[in-house]
Amino acid sequence: MQIKILVEGGAMKPGPALSQKLGPAGININEVIKKVNEVTKDFKGLKVPVELDVDLGTKEFEIKVSSPPMSELMKRELGIEKGSGMQNKMQVANASIEQIISVAKTKLPNLLANDLKAAVKSVVGTCVSLGVLIENKLAVEVAKEVEEGKYDKEIQEEKTETSEEKKKELDEYFSKTNAEQQKILKQETAEKEAEAEKKAEDATEKPEEKKEEKKADPKKK
Image (cartoon, rainbow, N blue to C red; front, side, top):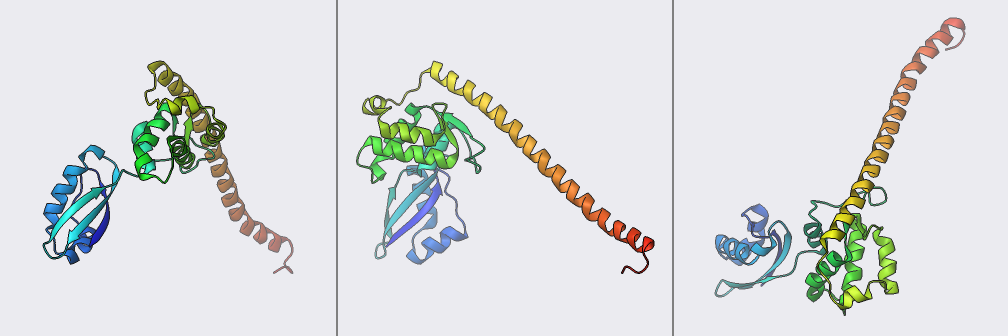
């Protein structure tokens, strides 16, 4: 019997959902939790896919751990908690191509990708969804550059270390970008609030205007 679950690395806990999945197998849930937490401790803070292969006769089980989803690996690499949610307006981080390659190497064994370059393309696609800049550019632009071969040298050499100088440049660029994003967001919020306030005022004034019309022309109903 195979049971698939998604757990937080090193922090699996008992609960109704877990009991519902493991209960029918008749295995010791506390023992499962202990062993799963042991084998996933290196993925602390990440969601990790785990598969239990249970022998229903002996109640023994084997644990197979897959690497976390690409989005989780990317968020850990960049030190962010979540993606943008407004990818067209807000970017949440600025990654180096070396960081992209690092995540691609980690995830490659679990991908259908044939080589590292294909895995890099997949990671770049994840950055588009998360709202992450790469090398000071939108991820969609970098996707084209990867396709054109601009980063073939770095990919072939499997570069995964970003120099301190480059990190500083990326951070400075993102700080400026983020400040501009926040400025635009505040402006849009203020405009929406002003529009909502105007609509509320208009809705309040209209009944009063009708009353005044009736007074001026009693025939109007």
